Structures are given as C-alpha cells and as structure tokens.
View 1: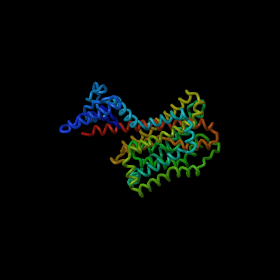
View 2: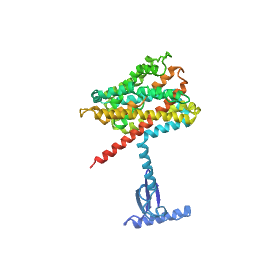
View 3: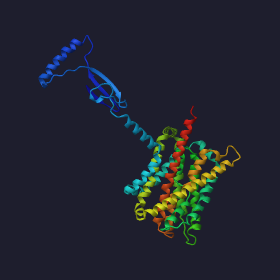
View 4: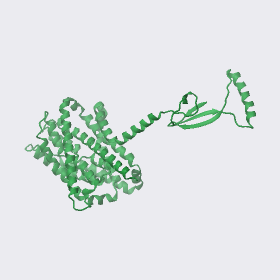
Length: 424
C-alpha cells in the first residue's frame, strides 16, 4: 500500500491482480520478476491488490485509519479546520480595528520602518490612492445624488466648521500638567474633517460615499481659510500668528482634488477598469482597511520617543479626554441629525435616509491630523512645545478611527442580521 498526498487530497494505492483471462500470464511474469528481484536484492515481494481510493482531508476520522485500515483517512482533524475557518471569518469581519490596533502595536515595538515611511511621505501617497479609488468608484449619478442631498451637505459644513470648534472652549477649562495636552486636544477639535478615515469608513458601511467625499473635500479647503480665525480667537489672540494659507491650500488640492478627478477620468475612459473594481469590491475593501492601519503605525512610530517620556497615567488621561471628545461629537451629530429627520415634514427628506445619516455622523465627528500638524508647526512654540501639542492630536486621530471602525463594524453586523431576518 502507498499513500500519496496532494493539495488537500490523499490517494491510497493498493495492488490487486487483474481479472481473467490475463491472470495466468500476469502471474507467470510476476513470478519471474520475483525471482530476478530476489537474486539482485535478496528480497521477494508479493503485490496483492491494485486499487485507487481518493478522499478529502476534511473527511471525518475513523478509528484505525493510520494503522492499516482502508476505511477513512483524516489528515487534519475537523476541530482544527473549524477553528481556522472561524478565525479567518473573525479577522475578515474585524479587519479594520485589528489593522489599526496592530499599527499602534507595531509602531511601539518597531518604530524604525514607521519613521522611514513617514520620512518619505507614505501617508500622502496612501491618501492620494484612497481619493483616486473614490473617483474610480464614483458613478455619474453620484453628483446628482449630492445635489439632491444639499441640506445634508450644508448641515455637515456648518457642524464641522462653525459648531463643533466651540467644543474647544470647554476643553480649555480642563487643567492638566503638561498643559500642552489640553491645548493640543482643543486645537485638534477646531480642525476640518479628516482625510484618511471618513470617506473610507462610509464606503465600507454602505453610506452615501459621494456625500462624504464632497463634504470632506469642501470642509478641508474651506477649513484652511477658517481654522486660522478659530486659532487666533481661542488660543493665540494677540500673538500675531499667521498660517501659510496658500501653500497649504495648494498641497491639499494636489493630495485630494487631483487624484479624485484622475480616478473619475480613468473610470470614464477605461470602463473595464471600473468593472474590475466593482467585481472585486471585497478585495478593495480589505486593501482599504489595511492601508488605514498604516496611519497610526507611522504616527506612533514618529512620536514614540516623546510618548515614552510622558508619565503613563498622564498620557492615559489625555487619551481618555480625546475619547470623550470624540464620543461627544458622535452623540451630538447623531442626535441632531435624528432630530432633523424626525422634524422633517417631507417623507423624502435627506435626513430620513440611513446612508446620509451615517455619512454625516462619521465625517462630521472626525478631525484632520494633517491640518493640525501644519497649524502646530506654524505656531513656532508660542502655545507650548510642538511635540507635546501634537501627542494628544496623534492619540485622538488613532482613537477616532478605532472607535468609528467599531461603530461601522456594529452597523455592518446589524445590517446583516436585518437581511437574514427579511429572508423567507
């Protein structure tokens, strides 16, 4: 008997004599072969059966399989296969939070590659790719959909640029040593929407990605003009601080608008590329989740030395403050959007649509670390040590993506449960 194993399959080869009328001839030739083999090796062999049996490694085990029985053979126990399948399902279902937490852990344990990636502006390339992919996915009806949802767009801009920055006044009343942690968190609250999280998370949860995209780009470009006013009013009144508005504006246009338009042009010129992206939506969602994990990896790697200098209990308090602020923004925007949907007289109100509400909650509650970094660098140490000002901003950026990814995960599972319940 011989066993041959391939990819996921095993073949058992057993030798048996052929049926008559070849039995006599075969036996005579076989006896001669035995005589020759015994002369050469001193060994005589008897081959009794010729039989193939193919089975899958996922077949259940039977007693005596590895002791000569030919009933069933199991190379991998079913419990192991079940465990591996369950683990893969868990990883795919929770890939985004796992990628973010893994990025933080990798940044702490091995910061060299993260610092190198930050040095060569990998975050800008990833952001360009995400917005290029958004343009590649955008359909011709998306622009019409955004125009129809103009009340949601106006609410989002007002919330991001005018209402939510007022939270910074409340944050500044908190006392902590070093005070830069409070000031940095307050500065972060004045920023426009984030570039790397809101749109991607909205796409993953099936929200109105077109609304999230336009809201992000518009708030960021307008925020470059409005944020300096908030910084001057709340923090630097009398210091004569100026923000390089035009260079920052030009840089963001290159990072956001150009890739978005290029993706749309590629979609219109090469329909096969667009169809490929749509057919492999799951693959691109997994890729997006992994790429989002690069942002906390690079930020934690760059700030690791400063993080280690701060007392753990103080930094934990700063992290908790950032978590509290972000949760407050989520509750504030979620409640206000819900009130607007209930108070709408028309049944077709944009606030009644779940995809619009989810896009508004995610985009309006997140803040841009890129703009915060540019603002802090231009402060020149007037409001405190730049590194200490940025530490709570980095922590808040990581926190908001992790928290919102958990929220998105909850929404996805809820939608799946509803779909299962609707099936007959």
